[in-house]
Image 1 (tube, rainbow, N blue to C red):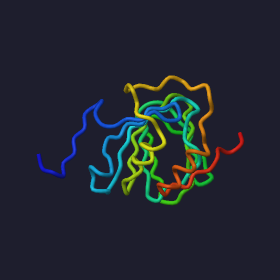
Image 2: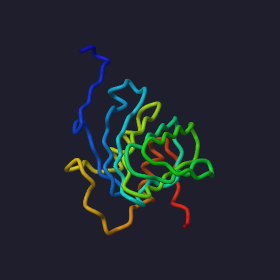
Image 3: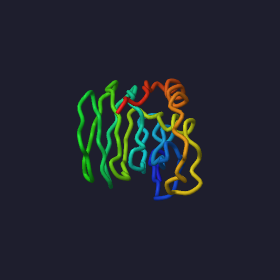
Image 4: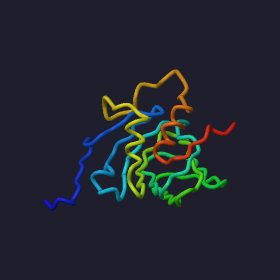
Length: 157
């Protein structure tokens, strides 16, 4: 197969547990010469990321489940088949309203390095055991900053 072709089957590649979710790398920045990072995420209800901006674009396709997406001050509901494209520098975050499985493409690549540092290697390709302690958002904000992501604490409900 040509050197620049990338193939990954289900269950292959790096996977991380973070925020009680499973984050699987489908195509890393290194595998795409920095062009993109593609990830499949399985995130339980109520466990989405804090508000943040990216140094590049983010395109999100909902495979299963439902979510509430907050994009630049607006809120949009999404379910299977929904697609969101978020330009660089747009403040956004999502709240799963059920366990959601999404496919995300980040351009340019590199965000996989954030997940490798912020998460822990997944022991299995399933959601991690539920944590009883809240996530350390200050730690995530600091790690995100090192990767060009500007992250904020969750807004008050």
